Image (cartoon, rainbow, N blue to C red; front, side, top):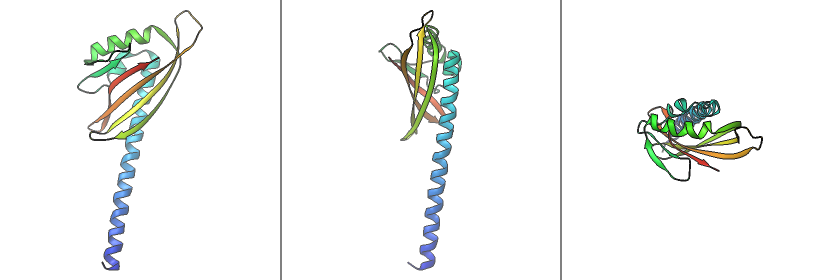
Length: 147
């Protein structure tokens, strides 16, 4: 290979690597934005806003040790409303990570510190969220509440 061809090949590889990195960073920013929206909706107790982030095929839920779904938006909102309204949120923090695959998947985790209404004893739970890329958007496919 000539020096000129070698230089051209190296330049193409650098451009591909840069484009891949830029795409991954964009996906991470979008994932962070969806997790922020999910966290804000959860904190407000807005079940309708949570399921608005769900995949087109619906969302599966495991809030009592048994997975159900995928559920339509209204059914999922009713289940989540029951869970969220039974507790008073003290703090809520989110973290997420792109996993990969085809279609691209990600996982998020909300640390939910709550107390039963009328009490002062805090309890810590973890809300595990699975997401998938649908077009250019992250969509929630599964929500699991772990005590």
